[in-house]
Image 1: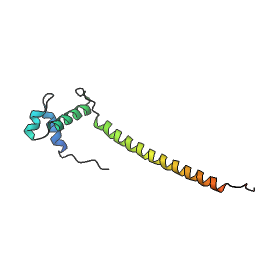
Image 2: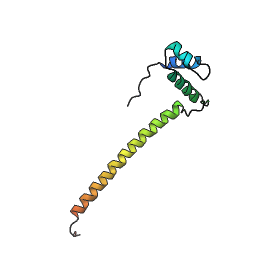
Image 3: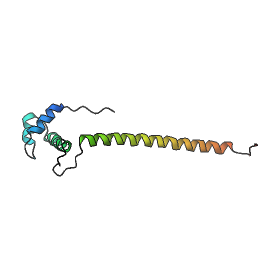
Image 4: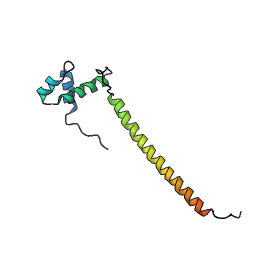
Length: 106
C-alpha cells in the first residue's frame, strides 16, 4: 500500500521546523495557517531524526519508522504463509486417514 502523500511539501515542513523557537509552535502555525499539532509533530520528528531527545515524547526516527513498517509487513507475510501451511497439513492429514483403510501389499 503506498504511503499517503503529505499535504505539505518536505521543504515547507523543514522551514517551519527551523522557524519554531521554543516548545510552543502556535505563533508560527497561526502565521502560516497550519495546525499547531502538525508543526509540533514535525519538530519532534526532526529532533528524533537528528538524534536529539524529544521533550518527554517517544518519537522514532524516520529510519526506525521505516524499519518497523518493513518488519510488520514481513511478520504479516510469514503469518499468512504459516496459516496456509497449517491448513494444507490438516487437509493432507485428513485425506491420508480416508485412504488408509486396509493393509497394503508390498
